[in-house]
Image: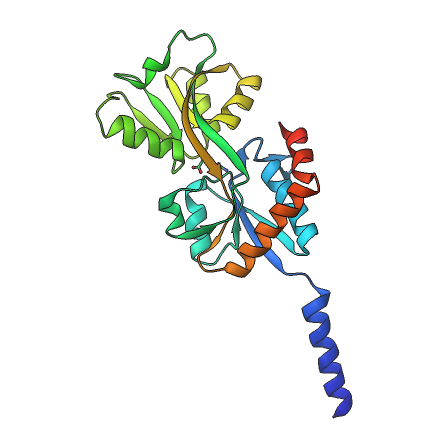
Length: 240
Ligand code: ARG
């Protein structure tokens, strides 16, 4: 009896201290330089940030890739524990999830084909505009251009921004509205250019389920430590 009790205690200790908690991190890995796949691995600023944070705060992560507009549902339903997807902190989203302290600031860029002479008036009238479904760019175009009737052309949503950009390069779209750091980076490798910026001053945050304050605290502490020990600067140098 004594022996088995001792055994049970040892097992419990091993279980609680021996194995770090595994958190399922949801992302949408078509968003370089924040998250993308390279040689079959999830890489990018957010992915490294989560790996470094896991090391620092002593947990493990499993990365789960899905479409951007499924991430919040995945978190709410309990299939994910954390969202790390260049996700902008918005009031609407903050009603359903809890956001960490901000870790990035971005605006919305207006991209056109490299050889195009379109200006920002591309947002008006009979032009075709593409966005990534469910993103802040999508919401902005819908609210400010589509609903107001300013844009009368086709307004098209894509599963990934790369698909939208491909349609832009192929001449099926006149412009794409997308987060500025991602658009700028894309313009370096493909024949597109940024012709204007919508100053949205949005902040990216990591998200957890509403009320999961313990995990949120861990994440905020992790962000603070990675900021202080220079890891975040290293990741910026690596990816930007
Ligand atoms: N920041 C924008 C938003 O929150 C776009 C994020 C897209 N992220 C991604 N991994 N595809 O709506």
